[in-house]
Length: 252
Image (cartoon, rainbow, N blue to C red; front, side, top):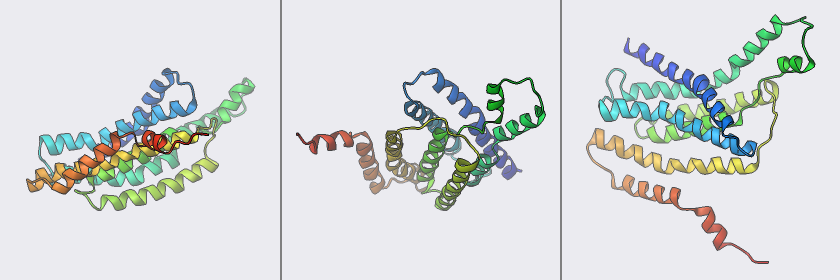
């Protein structure tokens, strides 16, 4: 019964992330009135990433590990997060492939087929494929990497799930991009560089996870993890690009 309940909780969390929170952050970002599509996409992706990381990784860690100290029991941290690894790797591409919004649009076309009381704009909107969301893709990838690095010390096999899931992400996303969606806007290359910079947080998450799990399960702290955590924090906070631009600046 506990296993079934654990799967139900994981499924509900994923459904809330994919449909409730994604829609909410789209609306919030829209009302922020960004000056470009790139800044809007970055704002949405960052909010969505942090939200998904909290619901999939931090919330269970806080409740089951830090408060209840339940690692191996029924609905414990290891059991729930292993299920989360599996669903995160294989459920997300499946949702992308099925795309309920695409199914709703297809049903609308069938229902209103032959209706002549449409303007050309309304007809075009009805026949249009769903818009491709670059922000959602960035958020899913970054959340997966953050989640994996945080728990890799406790659940090493989770890295295999995540790696195979990322390959599946790529294949499904390429198919959707070519055949199942429309692209209305383009984003600058600066967005990609910025999102890659966000991945630097993994340098902090891995040693942080090691310290948390070592202190709870082994009742000791690893000196190497402490050193790596300090190095990771310094690297993340240090304005590396600014320093490099200053050091390598050339005057003409």
